[in-house]
Length: 173
Image (cartoon, rainbow, N blue to C red; front, side, top):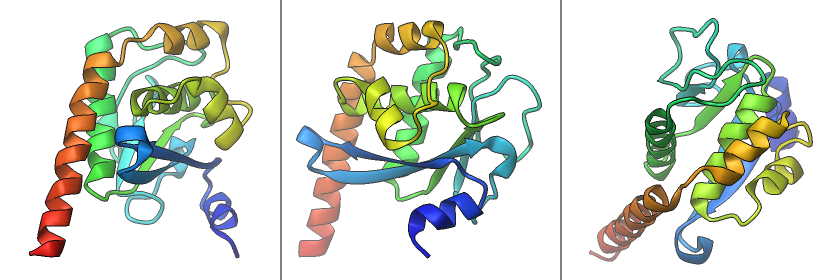
């Protein structure tokens, strides 16, 4: 059975591959997405990111409250959720992102992660590599396109650079 079939068997919608670092050269990352109710700590992820405002389970490690078919309303919360999520991925953790169905709000958050990693058209990337149903509304599309990830991107690229060189140093030493 291939990895995609394994993910589907665990109740996820798919896996989004991302590259982080200068020209994507440092890290190959993968994020599992789907309905948050299907998140199983340690089985399909080490960190659970819940992007729904209703019925937030206790298993959520990171919560970014977004109502169905809506967008986040606190940019500082969005920045923090993106930074913590990508930091967990850099630390080698497996991340599961989900809302009710794992399409709209999950796709919005995955597109924000892709934008932070430097993808030029993050919505098209997520739709092509995660699910065509990602980012369900025009308001969500506008939010992703207008969200400023510049300062966050710089901090995370430096974190990726430091992580990469630290790993190389310990490998060499």
